[in-house]
Image (tube, rainbow, N blue to C red):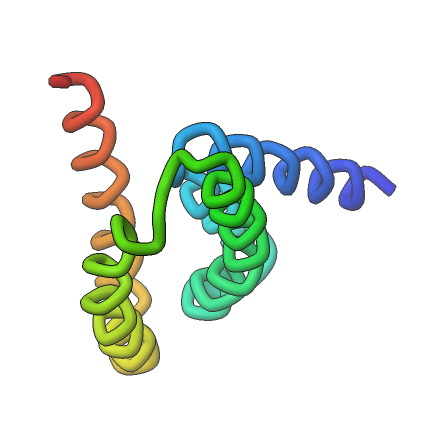
Length: 116
């Protein structure tokens, strides 16, 4: 029961951050999952968790007129190949490298936000 409450809490938090900030859900989901499953599986599972959350947020913003597909298309064109490369590398890289890269990404994002 406690595990289900923990999952519900972190799911709501991930969705909240993703909707509010446009990102951040993965930074909640990955560490939570890593306490239960291995590194590579937690990163893969995180993508599956964040995808529907992101779709809901994106549809809301599109319907509200806050963004257009034209605005996003430039990033989607290059983001899809980047996602394919990242998915391939996740399977090939050692989990230590993945953990360090994720930690550096979190630090970089935090510093960038603090300096703006």
